[in-house]
Image 1: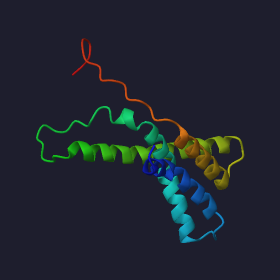
Image 2: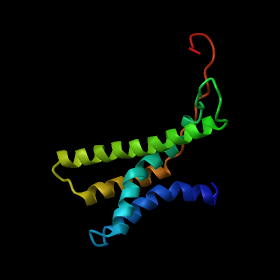
Image 3: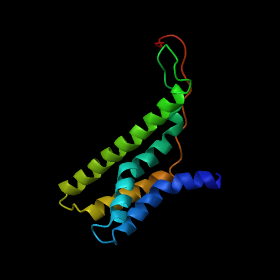
Image 4: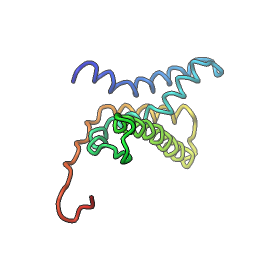
Length: 141
């Protein structure tokens, strides 16, 4: 693993720990709001999408018949990953918050700490391998 790969891998957990330390700032602080918003919107989802990266890239996007954009596949895959990051982050936040609400232990600090810990664990998980493309009988084309 190169130092650049390590930096990219550790960026989402670092954002979570930064958001946790931003809780020490005054409540209306713009820096506190920015740190928490960026982490909550993208941190947990980015860690999970990194794990699934090779599996997501196994099959490129299929464009329209007329190729007006030569980089359609690259742009489409990037948009897919960005949307997955945001939607997975929102889903994880809702799941964690629901658990804390159901156990009558809800607080923003607990939710943020749990999300940060889950993101840190996900950053240490190995990436999934892409399964080979299947071709042959019974496969729709």
